[in-house]
Image 1 (spheres, rainbow, N blue to C red):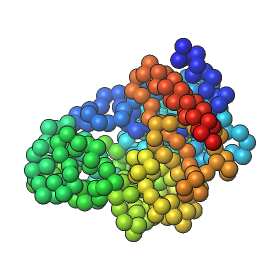
Image 2 (tube, rainbow, N blue to C red):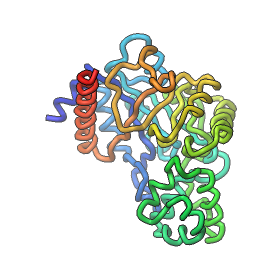
Image 3 (cartoon, helix red, strand yellow):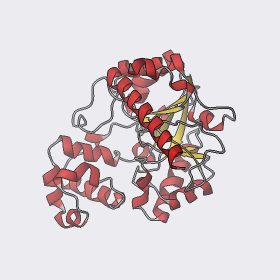
Image 4 (cartoon, rainbow, N blue to C red):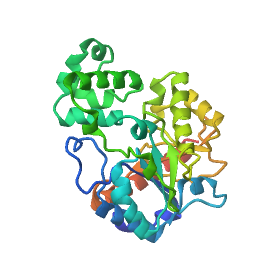
Length: 323
């Protein structure tokens, strides 16, 4: 039933797909917590969408003045090396455009801080890490059971946590190279007809956990880096983590200051209404779009899509009845 129902989606929705890693074999010490869709499953998913949707770049999706229902954009956050090695051949085979969102720190300096967190979890070092700076983690209310989620809470300054991570790995004499899985060589970010590159902040910190000054540094330092690379740039900004609590009015003010045309949520939703200049985020008066993370298997992907459809239709029905 859900497969049949999903075929009617182009009649009432537009979609923005979110992928991260696309490894055929997930690297050691990254198995838990890494969003990964292997290249074979990626092909099946995109091929299915191509049969029913008009796949365009995320900037085209926002800029198209006509009805956007039935359109879909493909995005990748964090620029894992697998995207270039294993996902790009799939996209080239299907002739599908995408936008890859970059974090400057991984290209120029060190691992993504969330990969450090995943490394600690997969290496069974959580308790050891919490004892390393017990006072700090007690103040942040970070314990073993909530470690993954609380470390990315807006209540905890991401920059501070990242600093403790670096001190811990230095103390343990664990090389940062053991957790570097995002693309580190900017020379590989060559111009490609199917790829545009977007701003995902320099360090991928939770924006609402930072001061406005810190947020501005995250945006402009990454923008400077992208502008130096002679690649096709997106004017749609990807909010790290992507929920409503992960950014604030300071974030949106800065995006408008630096002339971004729209921003992306990642709240596991579809866009039931077409995106156009009349559909704006009511709180921030800036164009926005919802994304959802593709599931790691084809069957779970289809079922998940069906659930998103039902949830969206029910929300629309309840909203109309409450007016």
